[in-house]
Amino acid sequence: MTGSSNNFCADFHLHSTCSDGVLSPSDLVELASQQGVTLMSLTDHDSLEGIEEARAACRARGIGLVPGCEVSTDITDDEVHVLGHFLDPANAELQAFLLRNRDGREDRARSMVRRLNEIGVAVEWERVMAIAGDAAVGRPHIAQALLERGHVSTVAEAFDTYIGRNGPAYSERIKMTPAEAVAFIVKVGGLATFAHPNYTKVAEQILPELIEAGLTGIEVYYRDLDAEAVAGLAALAERHDLIPMGGTDYHGLNNPGERLPGCQ
Image: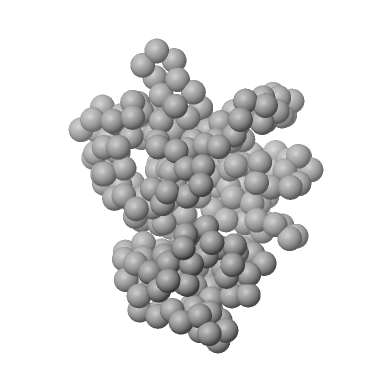
């Protein structure tokens, strides 16, 4: 979703069942193809497990694939997501890093389920794991379990009421700082992008540190941004000589503001 020109359409931020999306990598590629995408990046949270399946599906449909993932990082009172693009699934150091992150996700999810039950909101860990399937378990899977049990009416409500950053069942996990994540992505040969900076209150203040660490791009074109917001981010990218990246961040969860893959 960095934009389209004639028949070119790129979407560099997409999720599959290998993290918290609802479509398998191959089904996601099929949907992207139907939406006119000609170049895409699968960016599951802390996982490259879907890359080979996506690569085969992209090859069959004539779509270019950029291997990627999304990493969550922490700053004071906020969370920053960093996208890594052009990553090598065969890199052992990278895979070890992602495995540690996935293990941290599971520990946090267990803690959240325990806290939910302690405050009288019954959720079964076994059901959360079943919803996650082969994916790295995370908060969206807990949200789905809350929805199934009737504790909330939407996934968004689950985050707002229980498992969001200020919710009674929220648990933290050990994370890198944004600069550390950027530096690591660069170290293993990838390109690092600041994901949806519009969600980070201090985005402009932390940019110099990220650039010093090796930041290459910033997500300018994002699913629910209006023209004014896009223009502001585009100007920010130009001032700092960053590549204006974009994507739909498609999960298939029907969350507010969600858009189909592509360049709509």
